[in-house]
Structure formats: structure tokens, C-alpha cells
Length: 454
Image (cartoon, rainbow, N blue to C red):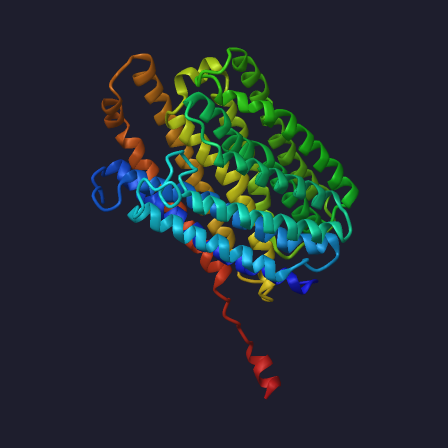
């Protein structure tokens, strides 16, 4: 660890990993409810479980981005974090808000209250006071990390990272705008949901991935930066107007069918570029870095992001296809594989690289970490394939033949059982990852060394 304030990242990473455990546990419970619908129906209904699953995903990914920024920006800027105190205040606000969200979702003690009660917008169900707290925490973070970068050395990695982080925070402001007109509501709702995950988050992903490639492969910075700017250009070009593929059926003008179809089809380009970038960097690399697990996660990130966000997204993004598939299990297959590839794996990659350095126990037991990669990747791949077949059948039976929704769900039961099995394998891999990264490896002292010491 080159800079003392990089240690701030430790608290963020450990908090993110705790929420990661909550997220995958809620996901496994949701998968079980699909096969046994009455499970905890009175105590913990499915809609609450789903909210815990999706909201904890978003929060722990954000915590991961913040932690990664506090780790890599000091190295890139060649100076300490501007204010460690503000960084910990920010984390405290985020933890308090997360606790408030969990209590609100589970018990809903202030139902209907404009400030304290749960709001109804999907993925943005957090009470208003929590949203305000998140906004304050984000402003603190932007000030802290921007001052660190501006007062130090400027690099392409920090420039792109800051662009993505500023975009993330500014677009979150649309979460406060909730017009009464449903079509208008959804138009601006997608400014947060889509332009986060298919816009500015891609910039954050590209910057963190570039940093990992610099550290793990030893390729010249000039080469990495050229690739980085190409990826950023294609991500912004396709992602902004690609928002239109959500506008087909919410009352917007018909031209969005063509804009959405054309530009969202191009969203596969930046993910292919990132995959090519990572593999070319490893191929050209001159460094045999000891942290093989971090390299494995980095390569896994770009592969699963390309297939999940790129290929699976392209499969049903054209308006003529999306007319039938929208909201089916095909959407769920795309969402699971894309989030796991693009952002979950990215965070786990940077955690795998950074935590051993932060905790001064490098190298650590990488075998368990790499085993967790294959368990989680295999489980997610099988889950997504299963959901794709389920969605294809659902589309035909429900949207083409017009069968009743619940009758179709009964016919998909075998796929839901397989999805639950895949989820169980994924959770096993997640637990193995947490153990490999957080539990110190037992030191083995040879007999010769013991004798010599005596």
C-alpha cells in the first residue's frame, strides 16, 4: 500500500461484502418462493424479498465503486485522499440509510408518510429521507475524490472514473422527480435506471478495469489509455440514445422505436471492446503478477459482461421482438447475466486485488478464490440459460397463444427448480469467496525453519 489513506477502502469493501451476502441470500429465498409460493407469505412476502434483493445489489455495487475509487485514485493522483474524515462520514451516512431501508421494507412502520414511508417506484422504493441522505453522501464523495484527483497527477483512468462518478450522482437527482403522468414518470425513471447501468456505470467499469490491467499485466499506460477512450466513446454514443429501447410502450412518439432499436443494438460494441481490450492486454503483458485470482476475475468480468449485457441484451432489444418478450423471464436472464458480468464480477475483481494489499497479507489462498469464481460463474451461466428457455416458452404460450399467466407459470415449474439449484451453487461460491478473502490463511512453518529459529 503506497498511501496511508488507501486504507479507507477497507471499510467500504467489507461493508459491501456484507451487503453482498444479504443480496445473494435474498435472491436464493426469492428463487425458492418461485417453486414454493407460500413460503413466508405472511411474514416476508415475495415483493419485499425482491426489493431487498435488488436494492442491496445496487447499494453494495455503489459501495464497491466508492471503495475502489478510494483505493486507486491516490495511486493514480500520487497523493493522499483529500479528507479521510469526510470519507468515513460518507460511509456512516450510507450505512445508516441502508439500515433505514431494511427496517422500512421489513416492517413498513411509516406507511404512506411522505418523508419516512416507502415509495412505489421500482428500484427506487427507498423513503425520501434515505434518498436525501444518499444524495448528501454522494456530494461528500464527489467533493472528496474530485479534490484528490485535481490536486494530484491527472491520468486517463481518473478522468474517466470522475466522469462516470459525476454522471452517476447527477442522474440520481431524477429519483426525486416523480410526475403524476405514468408515461412521463417512466421516461425520467429510465434516466436513473438505464443511464446508470448502460451509461455512466460503464465508464466506471472501464476505468477500474483499465487500472487492473495496468497493475496485473504491466502494459504501457499509453496503450491502455487509447483503448480506454475508444471504450468510453462507444459507451456514451450507444448508451444515451439506447435508452430508447425502454420507450417503446410507455406513450412516447413512434420514432423511439427506431432510435431505440438502432442505438441499443450498438450497445454490444463497448462490451466487445472491453473484452478485446482485456485479453489483448493480458496477451501483450510482460508481468507475471502473483495475484492470479484477480486476473481471473478481471477476464471473467469482460466475458460475462459481453454475453450478458451485449449478446443477451441484443437478443431482445429490437422493438419487433421486444413487443413479445418484454417483462418475461428472458428479461430476467439478461438482467442476471449482465449485472453479474459487468458489475458484480468487476467489484469482486478489484476486491480480490486490493484487499490482500490493504490487509497486508499478500499473497493469500487464491485456490479457494478461484474455485468461488467457477462456482459463481457456472451457477450464473446455467441460471441464465435456464431462464432464457423459460422465457422463450413463456413468450410463446402467453404472448403468442394468449394463455393465462398463472397457467403458463405452472408449466415453467421445472425451469424454476433448475434456477433454484443454480442459485444454490452461486450462493455456495459467494460464501467461499467471502471465506477466501476475509479469513486469514493459516501459516505453515517448515520443520527446518523451526529448528533454525531455535
